[in-house]
Length: 214
Image (cartoon, rainbow, N blue to C red):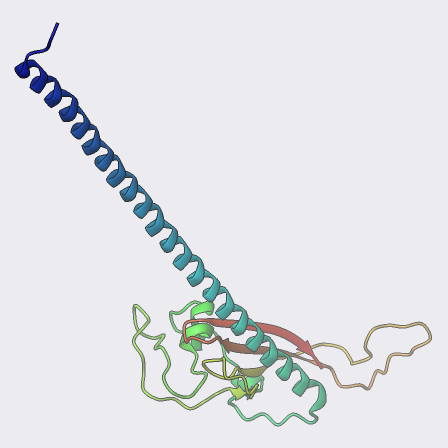
């Protein structure tokens, strides 16, 4: 039986119309797939940028720690090798002018050493204000700089030494067999060395302290 032209044209339209519809669905699926891949790519880029920032923050903190540690060792070496000590009331303070809680104002000890204390002689946070944070004018430098000649640092590290107290007893040192204690020896003193290190950026700050007896 022969198919009439009208029926043939209708079949042709249905077949080709279905084909065109299937081609449209392929385009939609391809666009959706492209969108998903784009979202995955953007998320991967954001994660990579965040990891890069985290890595840089870690590097800056390590630089600041190494600088502070170098300044701390410099202060301890000064105590070891310098005699007599000449107190100057700035970076080498005797018992009478050592820093006390009265100098901290309403700042906690961490804020005082990391932000409030005037390390470089430029500006310092005013701990007497509430809340603390407003800066004062220029101040006299009260710390000793250690030149590491490291261009990666935002600033060279600094330290101060405070004589906290004179201990009771003599400087006989550790007891050893056959070693007599000298009763006429001068009683040792307890010192605190505070070091301040800054990494490659001004907000990467590390403060270290040690106690030293001599």
